[in-house]
Each structure stands twice: as structure tokens, then as C-alpha cells.
Amino acid sequence: MKIETTPREDHQVKLVVHIEADQYQKSMHRAARKIANRVKIPGFRPGKAPYDMILRSVGEDNLKSEAIELIIDDVYPKALKESNLTPGAMGRIENISEEIPPVIEFLVPLAPEVKLGDYHSIRKEYQKPTVEKKEVDEFVDRIRTNYATSEPVERAATRGDIVYLSLSGSLTNPAEGENPQILKHGSYPVLIPEKENSEKDWPFPGFGENLIGKNEGIEGTASYTYPEEEGSDDLRGKTVEFQYKVESVKKLVLPVLDDAFIKMVGEDKSVEEFLKSIEEQLKLRKTTEYDRDFANDMVEDIRKQATIKYPPQMLEDEIGEMLKSLEHDLEQQKMDLVTYLKTRNMEKDIFVEQEVKPAAINRLERSLVMDEFTHREEIKLDMTKWDDAVNETARDLSYSSDINQLRKKMSRDQISQAVTYETANRLMNQQIFDRMKAIATGTYTPESKEAVDQTEGTDEVPKKKKPAPKTKSKLGEAEK
Image (cartoon, rainbow, N blue to C red; front, side, top):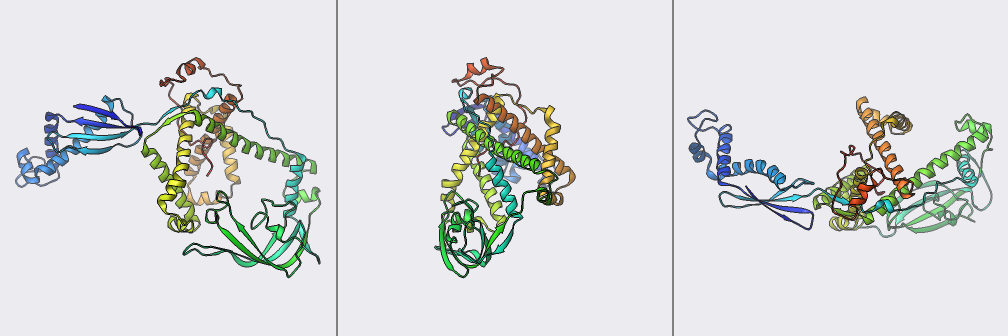
């Protein structure tokens, strides 16, 4: 068997296999026996007809087609091994010559290659977030607002008031077939934020400014163009006109922050303990967000200096997964992809090329970088922390609003598997983050520094111990 390999620029290899005459003849006879076992040959028991009789009965073309299938199953893995090729996806047949014996051409997508470069030289300052008293007070005020009572006032609306509106909203330029109504006409309470252009303002940032100074019975309109990069998908770039009429104005009366109020919100703590718990909660939230951004920035810095090669099939698969995920999300909104694209006034191929493909490239490359980073750093699950991590995952799951839905859809064993999988993800992600943070802040010295230094800037990949099983890392995954 003669083999020719031709590397391509798209990280694939053209593999040409010349089949030998005796191999072809043996495959023809194997094919004949296989056919004889499933096709009745008059005068012979299944599988007992001679080769010439089978050839006359089924025809040379059918026999040749069966033989080539057997040859392909046999020679493809052998050709990969002899050519020292590691496929990264399923190969495909490019051509089968008409000559006897045939020449078969395969296209082999190679396994991805990632060279991270000198990522140990990357430096990033890590500043653990702090929480100021003002932030605690604002958070507590939001809780108090949820329990506030309202009193009618005979004056114009001002900041902090609740204004009851007769309100509706419609698109100014709806696409063909698109429902222009965004907000069904009805009575809605709107809180005028204490701060100008608050993100909490509804139905859009800055809407409350239109209500300041308005008395009961006053009518008005307000228009807003939703940003292309923010908001729900069906409103991006769209302009909506809201029509309103003030029905009433009420002021909020916040409850006093005392032991009775704290018990009312379900906490058995003193005021001092309650404020301290709020501070710790805010600190944890800010630290989680900061660590996520720190990790994403670190992964991006590594990716920028990395050399990443992968076959087109991997990108196609990633695009397919992202489209499937989008279709699932749209289904939850009672919409399909065709309707969604109509609201965007965009053809599918343009949408895929301009929006899905760049996001798929980003996600795929970050994932490959994370896999290689984990492999190079030889990061494995620290089983000494497993029990605590399982308890934390189970506790978070029990607090989830979706737990009852999970119990309806999943068996006890499936929930247990989900907890195990999520625990492994959390633990691995934390270990990856800890290593990246140590590298970025210059506090980590690799145990095999010499081996790493010898391979940086070369095409050689150091031999490593078998890496830990892969888990779905969220650290390096771009936010959707």
C-alpha cells in the first residue's frame, strides 16, 4: 500500500492511498462472501455460492462497491498510523479512481495545535474588591423599598415617588410581519429613581426623568432607541415610542431599619449583624465578578500571544452548537430562527458570517487555550477538597428556584450525576483560576520551569503526564 500525504493550509492533510492488486482481489472475495450471506443465490445455501456465480448474480459494479467499502474500513486507520497523523475530526473521502486497483483520496482534519508562548511572563495586578458603607446602605435601602408602603400625594411627581401610569409602547418602524406592540396597554407603577439615568429605570434608562414635575392627568410620549450591543435580542437597534398618562402619584414610606424589620425579612439577627451579613454578601458578589473578569482578561492575554491551528470542521461544529443553543433560547420565547431573523431584517448566511462565526471563533479558541493551559500546567482535580465542593454545589442547587423542575425532569441518579459534574467544573475552574492568578501576580514558580523554558519559542511540545479528564471550563468562555 503506497501512501502520499499533502499538508494543506487549513490544518488538513490530503491522504492518497494506492491500493495494491492482491489487496483489492482479497477484498472482492470478502465482499462476495458478505453478499452471499444476505442475497439468495439460486441453487446454493447462504454463503456457499462460488465467487464467479456471485459475480454474475449481483454484477461487478455492486461487488466492487462493497469491496471498496471494506477496503476503506481497513486502510484508513492503517494509513493514518503509517503517516503519523492524529485526526481532530472525522475525515472524508474526496475521490475514488475508476482504475483497478483504485486510488482513494481522503481529506483528514488534523487535531488542533496550540502553542501558548511565554504566558508565564504575563503580569496583571490583582486588587481584591472592597465594599464601602455607602454600598451597604444603598443595598439595604433597596430591601426597605421592597417592603415600603405608599401614600397618595397632591403634588407633582419627584424623585423617589411611585407614579401610576396608563402606558403602552410600540415600534416606530416595525419590520414586515413584525408585531409593532412591545408593551401592551395597561396600568403600570413606575418608580422614579433617586439617581438620574439609573440602570434600574423602567421601561428604559432615563424614562423616569419624563415624569418629574408631572401631575395626575398629564399625558406625554417618550421615545428610546435600544443599543445594538445591549438589551433583548428582539429590541436591539429598535426605536420604541411609549405613550403614557399619569393616573396618580404616591410617595414611598420606607420601614425603619430595626430588629422588627429584620425579622420581617426572615433574618434572626441584630441590626449590626444584619449589616455585616449584607457587607459580606456584597463582597462575595463583587469578588466573584472581579475574578471572572480577571480570568477572562488573562485568557484573552494568553490567546493573543498563542498560535492556534484547527481544521474548519471544528469551527463548523462550534457554529452549529451556537445556532442550536440560539434556537433553543428562541423556542423558550415562542419564536423560531426564521421569525427572529425577520425582526432583525437579516439573511441567515449574513447573520452567521457577521455575528455567529466571530463569536464561535472566540469561544473555540478560548476553549482550546484553556485546555492547553490546563494540560501544560498539569492541573488535576484536588480530591482533598471534593467533599466541601459537593456540599457547596448541593446547597446552591437546593436554593435554586429550578430545583422542583429538576426533580420533575430528572431521576435521583441523574440529579446526583449533575451535582458531580457541576462540582468537578467548579473545583477545576477554581484551581485553574488560582494558577492563573499566581502566574499573573508573579507568585508562582513552575515545578518544571526548565522544561517549559526549553520549549518556548520552538515547535516542540514537551512530553507531559496524561492530563486530567476534561471538564467544561467556564473560566475561558466568553460571555454570551
